Image 1 (cartoon, rainbow, N blue to C red):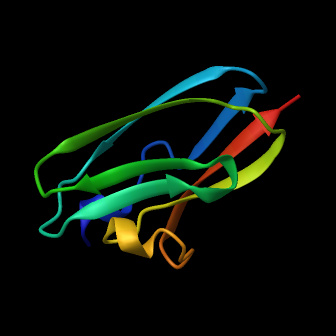
Image 2 (cartoon, helix red, strand yellow):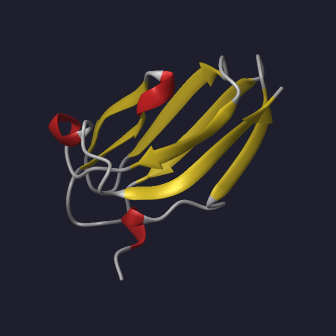
Length: 89
C-alpha cells in the first residue's frame, strides 16, 4: 500500500469562512497533486519526498472530496478520492 494515496485524517470538518491550512506529504515514488475541485483548491505537482502546503477559505457549505491525482494534469479526474472535507454553516 502506497502511503501517498491517503490522507490523515480522512475526513475534515470546518465552518464556512474558516481559514483552512492543509499539508500534503508525498511519501510515494511518484509525483502527486492535490485538489478540492469544487472549491477551486489545487496544489502544484508534489515530487516524491516533498511537501505541499495549501491554504484557503472554506467559502461554500457542503461536502467536498479531496482528490490526489498522480499529476496536476489529472486534477479533473475524481478517480483518486482519498478524503472528504465537510464545510458547515
